[in-house]
Length: 204
Image (tube, rainbow, N blue to C red; front, side, top):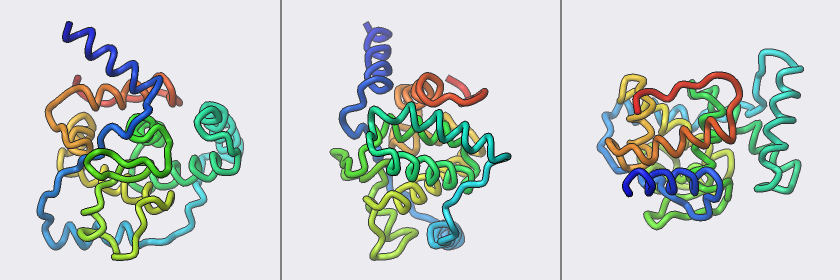
């Protein structure tokens, strides 16, 4: 019964993520140096135009990802803007863009104004306390660029804490450290919906 429940939860998250699932990052006091570093990462307003290995790879990637996302985001320009920003912010934070798309898939189903029961907001379901911790008072977590930058920066921070263990970092991001359901749901979406080359998520 437990295995069936996990399978159903994972399948539902991959195929029909109707509600904001998680984004319940838990408040943990940050060292001043860590806070300053994260604030600098958030505040940098460099152009979000992504840099691909080649023009052809950029065209191929955007064309393929846009087709996959079209059912959830019918507006082509909006899709391309999200994909380019997600790619840029993921690479900027040292993350795999496909994994970030998988996380967005599970967290919000690509709904810009998603709000979880815990109060997390936007595509990557960022908790509002992060604005006070590392951002500026006027930051809007429903702004696409702001939300993706916060989300990628926070996940990078958790990866650093966990010494590169993505499985545990995802647990921290979701507020469910040590439980397998959420990392496995992200892995499932990453591999089944947004895969682009080999991926490894860590222990399961």
